[in-house]
Length: 148
Image (cartoon, rainbow, N blue to C red; front, side, top):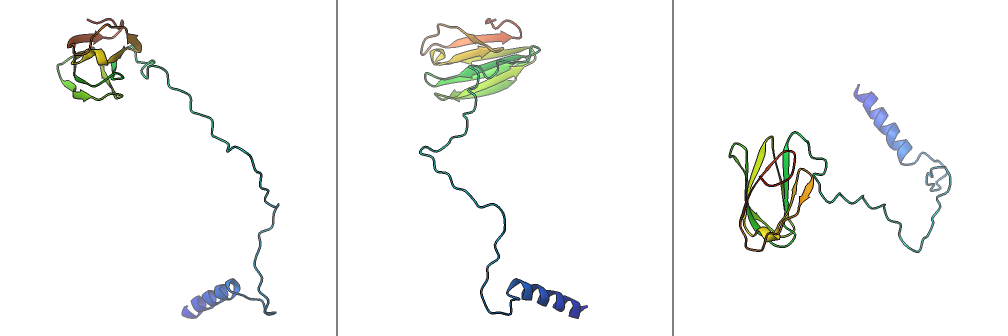
């Protein structure tokens, strides 16, 4: 058995590292069509990904309440609770960040610096006239996105 293994290894080494007896160096070349090179003046770019809709929750499920809070104009402290009073999130939303909260029945919010925030409820933007530094307590339910 050892002899068979040595013979196979020897044969593989002989064929890989030169079995030509004429002493000339030959390189193996794969056959096929020649490669072509094209030069363009500007690099081609992948098509851009489609822009997301204004609200990422536009297709919110109708059997839940979905609230998206964004902070495009500054930072704000936010506390969000579900219908049972469980805290969904409590913290500072930095400028440019957003959070989405969801519950089967109701989402309660306390917003510090409410003027810096943008709200979307069940896929619709809430038009508000909150001012910077203003604290707001809001409740939203499924269906109409009006404040409760």
